[in-house]
Every structure is written in C-alpha cells, then in structure tokens.
Length: 416
Image (tube, rainbow, N blue to C red; front, side, top):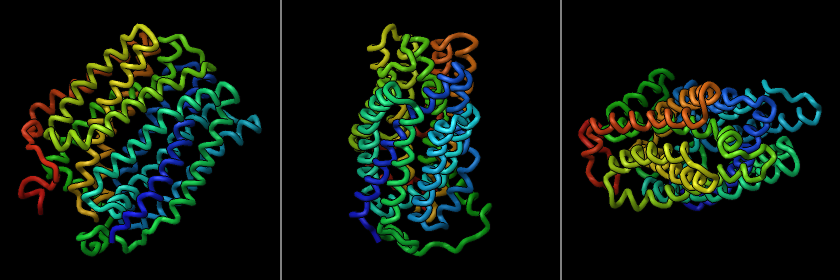
C-alpha cells in the first residue's frame, strides 16, 4: 500500500531534525576546536562520526528490514535527542569534557545508522518506486535549503550566546521529529505496490549475505557503490577541516559569525546537485554523471585548497560540494529504484557503508597532515581519493552504461 500523503509528514519530520542538526554541525566542531585548537582532533571527530556506518551498517540494514520502520525511526529520534541534550546539561553543570564531545558525535551517528536503514524502506512505501527520484530530490532540496540558513544562524547563535546553548535547539528538534514520525501512516504490514509478501526471516548472517550478494551482482549498484569510496575520502577531509580551514587559511576567529558561511556554501552546492540530478538522469547516462562528478570533485577541491580569499573560497567550496553530492545522490537514487523492497535496508545501508568507507580515512589523515604540514597540503592530497576513483571507474562497464530513465535492473543476473 502506498501512502503518498504520508510523505509530507515524513518530510516535515526530517526537515525539523535537519534544522537542529545544521546548528550542531557548526556548534560541535567549534566547541571542540575552542577547547583543543587541534586539527588532528577535529579530523578525528569527523572520522569517528563516520565509523558507526562501517561497523553497524550490515546488521542495522538486516534488522531494519525485520523491524517496524515507523517505530524504529521514532525511537532513534528519541535516543538522539537524549544524547544531544546531555551536552548543554553537562556544560551548565560545568562537567562538559572533550571526551564527551568526542563520544557524542559517534553515538548519534550510530543511532542514525538504524534510523537511515528504516528510512530507506519507509520512503519507498510512502511514495512508490516511481516517486523515489522526485521525493529524494525534494528531500535533498529541503535539506540543503535548511543548510543554507541553519549554519549561518548557528554561527550567529554561537557568537551571541554559546555553542552549548545552540546545541539545545538540536535536542528539541529531535524530540519534535520523534513525535511527528510516530504519526506516519505506516504499519509493519505496509509494503510498496507489487512488492509481494515479505520473505520469512532467516539467520541474520544469511540476510546480510543476501544484501552483499545483490550489490556484488548488480551491474549498476556495484560500481556506483565502490567508486563512492574515493568521493567520501574527499568529503571526510573537507568536513573534518572546515573549522580549521576557516581559522588557519582565511583568518576567521571562532566567535566570528561568518564561520557558518562555509557550511552554507556547501549546502548551496548540494542544493544545485539535488535540483540538477533528476534532469541529468533523464539526459545523461548514469555512469557519466558519476565519472564527471568525480573529475569535478578533484578539480574544485584543488580550487578550494588554493583559494586566495574568503569569497573565492566559498565559491570553490560550493562547486566542490555540487560535484561531491552528484556522485553520492546518483548512487543513492539508483539503488533505491532497483532494489527489491525486502532488501531496501540491507542493500542501502551496506552500500552506503562501503561508499562512506573513505570518510574516516580522509578525515583522520587530513587532520594529521594539517598539523604536520599545512591545511592546503592536506586538502590537495585528499584530491587523490577522487582521482583514484575516477581512474578505476574508467576501467569498468559503468562508462558504457546506457541512458535509462526507469533504472530497472540491467542484465539477466540482476533481474533474478
């Protein structure tokens, strides 16, 4: 049964949560750098936040395909609210430590893995397979519009009040999202049109293996997933060093409200990607979108690293994020469209786990290099991740993938 009207409620809940998270996305690294002045720890925090997907992606995907998706998403939102709320509470009691900051980010990310696994399947049920691309585009557009305003507002909030006070808003947003998600018109029995009855549960290892097997055999999902590793290496480096770059390269202070402009610029780039992707997928072979995005990723990351001033830096950062987001979104949309409903959680979390595998490597390595050499050197070396994926992609059948607007599985093996 498809509940297309429920998508509005789903999108509202996500938008509320994204608003709060956009504030914490600025406040948490600022708070950490304010306490430590360490590029290595800034990079390590980003690496640790990406690590839960690598560790939990496989079991979370399999379990989410078994569990009630609405209940899972609501419970995860409540858990995230509690974790985030602990930061301002500890700060008010003068008990906040660097260790707590380093643990909170990864803990929230761990909860998100289970939320994300449930959300993949919920979205397919709410909008149907034909509506996935449009719904994903609307969600990405909403997310990035919030990303344009949220970080700028966060910079002002942190400068005017304090980082812990700003983080409080995120805890409230998770609470509101949990309440909204609990009202979704979904039940455990709801499945997309034509999906058929869910298969009987088997051993967890066997279900995980089924998701891996699907990715390995699918001629589009496999290369789109593996090439995402190099893309995520650059993302880890950029995100992990945003605050460090703002301070060391562009001379901003931590209480400068303009620091939020860097996240806003990245959000603008993601908005361009989300808006352009549906049209690109109708006019350009999916393989070309990914390969072209990887080439642009390396080019604009070099421009970001070498930018002489704040304005050119923001433009380069926005352009880099456009390329980076195109690669990521292209893979996500294709996976959701071709994957059977009973595999949605497993395939999407597993694929994202693999594709995001480079993020902790990029973040941690870039942070160490920034302290040992310079921020610009660290970012320039991160370009090699995108270059490596591009080179690998040119040797795969992906560059010969035909233009397709339906994104049905290609080849006899993929259709079984």
